[in-house]
Image (cartoon, rainbow, N blue to C red; front, side, top):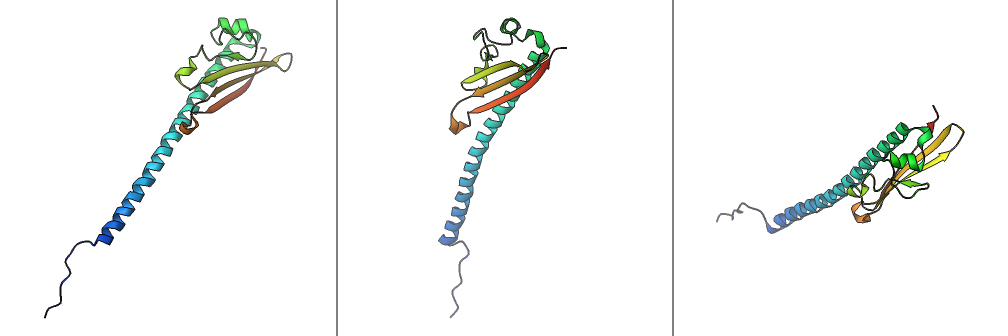
Length: 146
């Protein structure tokens, strides 16, 4: 009598193990993709904020030391009309709501000497924490009398 020959193919255990490994990999991939999307959104928001804040600093430097007042900055289109005292805002004039959820852009000007003013430009936005919607960017610079 001849011994029985095993038929070629996979056992149910081998198929189950392979399926378990593939499903585990798909689950890990989906979790990593979700994290990557959130991180990408956060990085994009911060890059946009850096650009806006740096542009605002450049505008303030172009105006110069003697014109860092509400009237001069408002007339130059750098800040919102209200409030008319420090800290000034630039939320509406720069249409920040197009880029960020619930944005507030502020400019604080302080005299730190007879010929030097410290200017701090801050941009804060608040949104859904689950979507990485919160953030803040702040830059401080000094503008001196020429």
